[in-house]
Length: 496
Image (cartoon, rainbow, N blue to C red; front, side, top):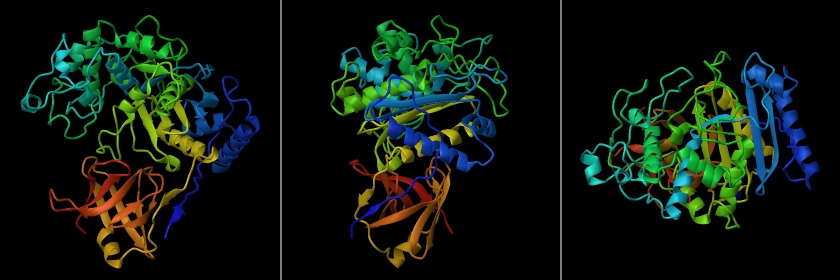
């Protein structure tokens, strides 16, 4: 029996129409979406009567957003303040530290350089390095590390992320960063598994990418990004220049801690530009995402080609809870649609960019507060936009009416992720299975497709309950729909 799976999203947050550069022929509909979002925000918290009060109640200093639909920005707005204790308001031209969103832009730039014949992502990266070389070991002798390995986090390199620096600090060079002469690391970056065999997040890998590009082409990554992406796309408020360099913008949001206090000057200096050094606005990043979407759709583009857009968003690995390409995440399924995305989280500031693989819809958010405060607000905003803009579509799959009793007994229990140690519970009630907490931190109903395979609303991978042939243990594995590869044995069942 075929039936559509649908789930209404209920989280609503405020949206305000962008005054220029947006669609103008559909203002009434946009106004209605805005009104619904505002009403939803107020009804969720009876103590607040405005977005500003909402931010104060949540402890987030500033928030900026842009929404695009059918390949056009339809609204954008900003609220709050750049710095605590001042009247300096965040506006649509206020740049935020994008943190790791820099990786997605860097990967796209590298694919463009490859298309131009200036670099090859599949040759040993040491071929391009001059100031420093990645040390060889048994893993790299068997499989040399390439730029593609580094851009996809499959090189096996260490150095996850980096501490921020501020005015007055001694700023390390790229060589010193890779040598481990940093507050957070004391050892040189190294390769800890055979490249290409699995996934491990590595900001240090992107520092190697940055050095390779700069050594080979004789230009800074910041200048290359400006010349090939930011200027041609009209991203006038975006830069990879740092606060201690000429050309850094003056209108910026400052970083704040959990107590709402300014973190030193509030403006971090990030010498590791490729992994986390870009500054931008939601509208600028929306222009980038729309160019990517047009390219994926085969429309005429001036900057990013269809080949480049596909190169960086095609799924390379499913070891990331559902899939990723060259930097870009492919594991979200909001509204039962395919997305490419990337998040960023530097200390006290960050954001997220989301774009649908088809249809030209998406959203960009930035906020100047710590992860524990900022991320829940941005998640609520994301979910409410998907709901209020009607981006949800039914997940149309061949779902069975009932689950065999023997299977119900087999799959219920506790499971632990083999990498992240997160635990989930699969429970049964009246013949219905639920996994809790699922991605997003909420319970999710499992819909049976047969052969021990289940689907979940707004998640692009099926869940397969089976024995892992490698260790003989029972798992809740993830099998990406539409991806011709093996299931990822992510969640191991714990003994009762």
